[in-house]
Structure formats: structure tokens, C-alpha cells
Amino acid sequence: MTELLGNLEELIADVRRRAERRALAIEAAADHEARRIEAETEAHVQAAREEAARTCAEAAEATRRERHAQADLEHRTRRLDARERRLDQVWTAAERELERL
Image 1 (cartoon, rainbow, N blue to C red):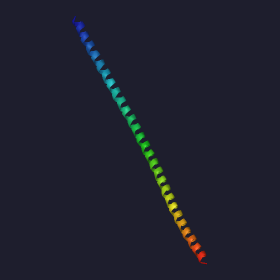
Image 2: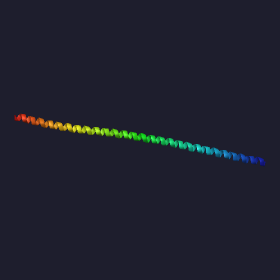
Image 3: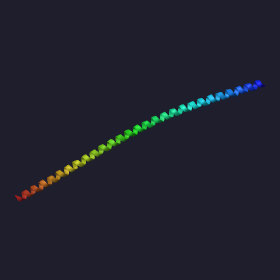
Image 4: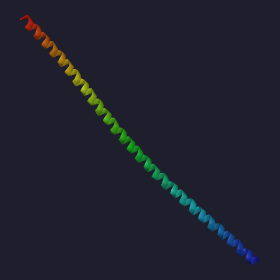
């Protein structure tokens, strides 16, 4: 009967060792998977940051171009208004000169 108990204790110890090895392997695989997911997530975050930066830069450039065009249009409008006022003054002076003659 002691032979049986000795074998039973060896069997229990062997089962324990296998369970511990399996648990360690599962833990190592889980750690590896967690690191892989973390690296993949970091790559996605970096790509999203780069895309956001590119989009913001494009939007800023579009806004700059639009404001530049608006300023240019305002400048041209003022110049045209000034020319029209000057022409009005010239025509008014010409009419007075004709009336005088």
C-alpha cells in the first residue's frame, strides 16, 4: 500500500508541475499578446496623430489662402472705389469747365 501512496504522491507532484508549467506558459503567452496589442495600439495612435496633424496643417493652409484671397479682394475693391471717386472728380471738373466755357 505504501507503494501506491508513493506513486500517488509522485503523480500529484507531476500533475502540479505540469499545471505550473502550463500556467507559466499561459501567462507568458498572455504577456506576449498584451505587449503585441500595446505595440499595435501605439502604432494606431501614432498614425492617428500624424493624420490629425496633416489634416490640421491642410486646414490651416486652406484658411491662410482664403484669408489672403479675401484681403486681396478687399484691396482691389478699395483701389477700384478710389479710381471711381477720382473719375467722378475729373468728370465733375470737366463739366464745370464746359459750363464755364
